[in-house]
Length: 204
Image 1: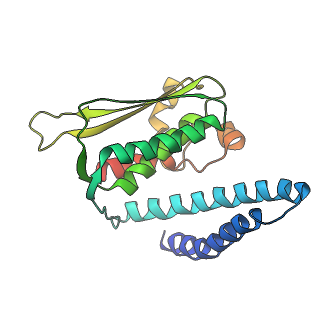
Image 2: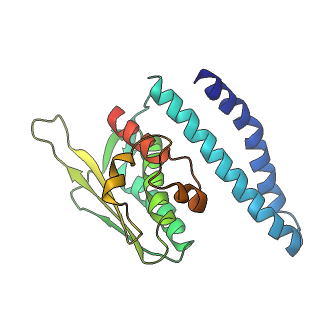
Image 3: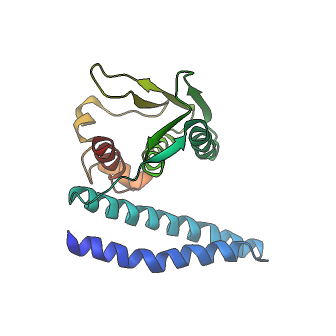
């Protein structure tokens, strides 16, 4: 585990340079043919970066060394950022996108908005990835727990995708697991996203 964590960290630094230079190169006067080569290169580099980041987060969470950094955050601004991010993902697949926010949400709160955004992005990415046509819908509200010190932010992500067979539901939050081997071949991914979401939610 320590070996994989160290190797992931060492790979991430040069990979960050590759991603950065690819972005700079796309901003130069490249031909149409060169642009066609750059797009898949950039997408592959972003995918590899995402996998490495997921591995690092997973190992840190498993080791109990993952720390949250809450700060005072303006909720409307945070949700507007989420909405723009999710809308871009949905539109890239020609999906309808709906973002509903309950009026009872507070204007500001102490929370780790970076990790909340990571959780949100994982959920919406999954929804868009496994939805070939139709819609993705996000609902945000407040969930009160009786006897609890404060209400919780509730985020629901709905989609018209293929869904998960009942017998595969226990695997949803298991690290490195996907419901079907054909899924990883068709859609890619490590099977870490939902496991990380669950671990972060538990930590919070």
